Length: 586
Image (cartoon, rainbow, N blue to C red; front, side):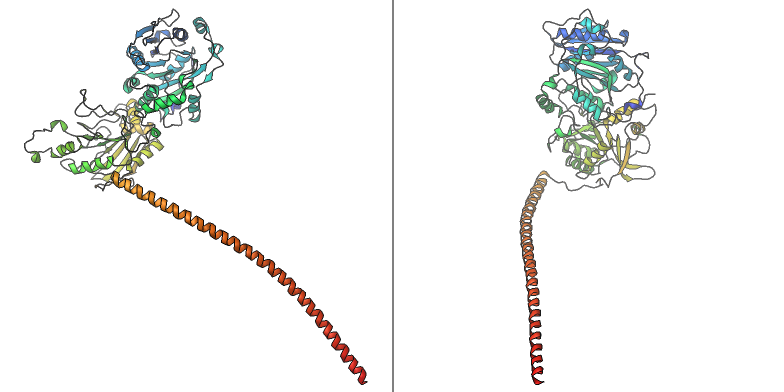
């Protein structure tokens, strides 16, 4: 039974101890090279001393048009071949090496990276534990003068030759802040760097070769496609390697990012910050919506049947759903509509009586909408839909690498922000499947929409047992959840769409209202400040009045004392006068 890894938490695996196991898988080490014979000699000397069995190792050196041509030195692994690739470019060279490789595992290696003698074994112990891993070693960048190939082959520890060296700082930071990527970061595929990374060959075949149209960023783009194929990304600290000198990224990070981002934005939907434009389309969309036209419960097991009206969906139902999807807040969305497109005839003499009239109208209405494509059958999970008509050199290519697919019954209309909310739920919680309950039918039948994460269903297809429901394998590896359709804004009726001009006018009105409120706020702020000043003056006047009152109280007190004294004087004088009068009368 194939082990099941939840998300990117590979800690459920127990790789073998180095030197204490018996390997069986063959590894092909692919080394693309352009010039640099002296460095290549060191790389091959390092491979010659590996602890992984030589009988299970082949090395494919790809000469990418070097002048003079590269040669294989005497000090090299016994299973080393030299192939030529005249087309310039790292991606072309790697693809040439990939075509020549025969191993169960492909180990990418740059021609200026020397592996520690246990590095290949450290990689391969993981690939024996699970068949869907991408393992990356720890690179260190050495400024040390190059030793001789003989010194490299004889060294028990390459640190003696190449230290002190600098770590791959960005990679180490990514690994440390995500718990070795076990914390399910949103973009673990960023670990895939081609300098010293190994990938299961079957997984690589599923993801496809390197993109030769890219100028830079090929490793990251391939890592993204490997993730969509179900890969788990494992950093292996025991797989040490030394890069001879600094990397180009260490020297010129800003200009490299500028060039790389211009290309990978079109191909990696996970880099949401590179897709800030509100309306443009991209080579790889973020979401594909399949407007289902027939019940297909077989792949996902019982309990997932969908209720349909007799005669299948009509033109109005499909149009209501498709138009609402295209008018939503998710800009990089595309729609696939399965149907019997191959039996439609353009020369129908009685189109109104055609039994395929609904299909004719759907095809005609969206024939020139580039975001809508047609297919003869609903695509299986994690498999790109084959467009109809098939690509014959002039037709559209399948939408490959789309991270999410929503299966939506026709006639069910999402609100403007429904799809974005579902994607937020799946992305933030890491769910592999979000099922949306739309309605319940007779018996156990239901009407449901399904948001499928491509990476989850691709991995489920790898690990599921014979006869097992694919959804159950997704539950074990990524998790699933049911939500209420009405809560997320799905209704079985068409709704007025907000056109771009209406939205623009609404934004203009909103901005004007914001400006008015801002002006009112400024006015009220000034009034508040005026009132504050008035209150301050009143407080100052009140303080002055309090001082005056105290002084008045003091004056009144003094007058009272003077009055009391005067009274005493008057009383004393009156008493003396009375006494004198009495004395005279006597």
